[in-house]
Image (cartoon, rainbow, N blue to C red; front, side, top):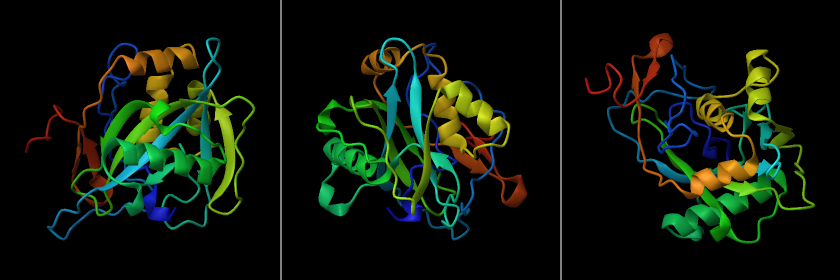
Length: 236
């Protein structure tokens, strides 16, 4: 996967009813992620299709998620911890099937975890990068239980580390400056923190439909911030 093909754009907003109470927690403000560039050309970049897998483990008793760390040498999102994922390749087709195929491929490439059936992935959310950003993705997030007997393996080049975290522990590590996370990863972790187990997340996601939402970026340079649909300034 090329560095720019990551799913981890700061400016995507969750698209479906994800949390156990129906929404993501609120966000005060967020800044563009490492390598992001605002679009000043006046021409909107069409978003590239992408897919991501949130791998869960813990069964009915606990919840941990897999995060992998991109190499600090990467021009785009260097050193950031993310869920495995990337862009859909041209040969993988179109639509939901293509997203599922890409999700399984990226998980294998980045984390060495092999899923036998792309159709078994559970759709969790869909995020679209705002029009104000140069590199844009329309990313479909899927859930998958970790296959029995498999653990992550990394190549040490594109991906240099991995870890299984409870959502709360990952957020706390980010707050302490121990790991670097970006907006969509943080928001998914915040939502996942409301669930008691991996099975509870999967059961909840199976009952809810996913609908895309696209935020806006207001301002530029150091003043740029994300505005969610319905927030002041979104429709201006």
